[in-house]
Length: 241
Image 1 (tube, rainbow, N blue to C red):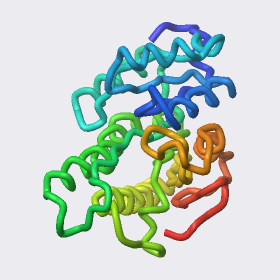
Image 2 (cartoon, helix red, strand yellow):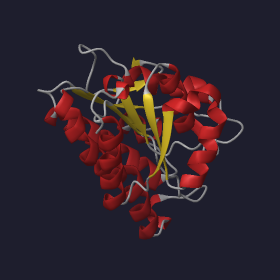
Image 3 (cartoon, rainbow, N blue to C red):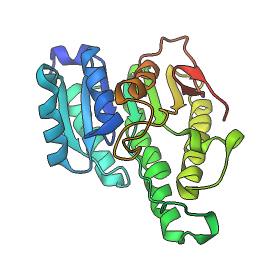
Image 4 (tube, helix red, strand yellow):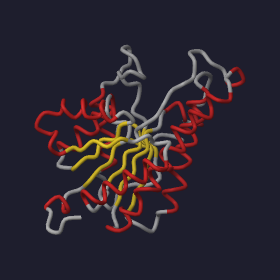
């Protein structure tokens, strides 16, 4: 850490899985809002390619390789953030996978699909959060946003994509438990559903653009001290679990 570095007084955000789609748009919007942003990407070259498309905002963004399933890489990321900025104020757990074959049913799926999905979509956020929360505690401030999905809502659970659905339900449980664990701190933890978004995962027929989908994440990332924690949101409104 360099004493007197002006970066130290600025909010710092980490966004995982951010070299494309919603994650990249969240990076762009946070940088435009004045954050220093760490763009996490499993493929560092793709992350650097994404940063190059940020124009004048690129100077506010650094790229770090991050496979969220790797404890070693999460620890290395946390060490890098501390060295560069001395703080971490926001974590957006955006990285995730959808591995279910089209039309898949629960008992037809190979167990390995569940394992890989849960590893990326549930254990990944846990691993990265565990690595970065100590930096939030140090400054008595933090905002954690978990990218979930309406497909994980128990209130509206249905057929199809069982591994993905179960992983997002588990991610929501992590949100609730962690929010309770951190209730006596100024670290807020929330889940959000971006809707059906026009990305590589959502496809070209989806009804929501990436800018609109990213808006709720940025809103949750910038909540005031009296804002909610332990909630599930879509379009800035609470939704059923």
